[in-house]
Image (cartoon, rainbow, N blue to C red; front, side):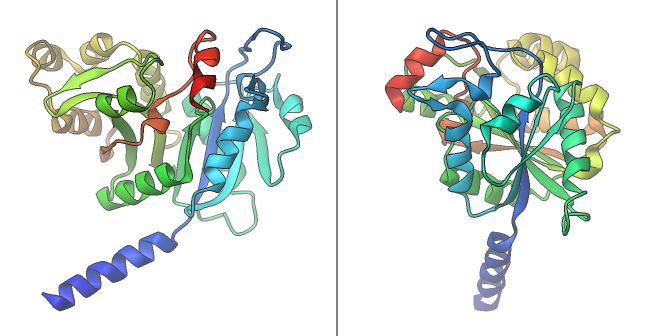
Length: 273
């Protein structure tokens, strides 16, 4: 038993040494217009006197598991991000879907010296002002333990309501409880480009749980209506549909499930900074 525990500790220590390239997904050509500010890309808009991007970068740099950071954005915003002049931040552009942006970012990362053989990357969305290094470290450690090809974070509803009660979220019900999407993932680079088409479908439906269930099949609609749908059901179906092992990591780090989808949320978010 002692030998087994020692090996487990060695494995955990080795995992803690692994660092991943991280991709900030800031694609799409849309802009935000906030009171007193010029129209700009969402991540470059200011929140309580600082750019949203600055908060995200602070959170990423607080992680011990990140090797480098690349931001992928729409070509119409690329020059603005260059002018933002964030030290150490790599940039590239893609005018496609989020999945296509991720694939483009991976290709760009592989051009960097010493990164040619990357196997997995971490992705985060560009609207997470409360992101912390502790939340990233916790997610990455849990995601590694699944040994899955793609791992997505989901956050307990209770955690979101406890930490950010006045910010609206879209929640979905599973047998295990109520959750929201976590905007953070750990994915194998082998998923691209084969899964891009299906990823685009899932992303388009992510804010409508009932339509997403319909896309997954009648079995899911029935189980959802009966409130009997489990996390295992979803993981198994997604794995079957995509042809890879997909898993979800449950976390109570509400910061990775609290994004700024709507303009009216920005003023409310300032209360929590």
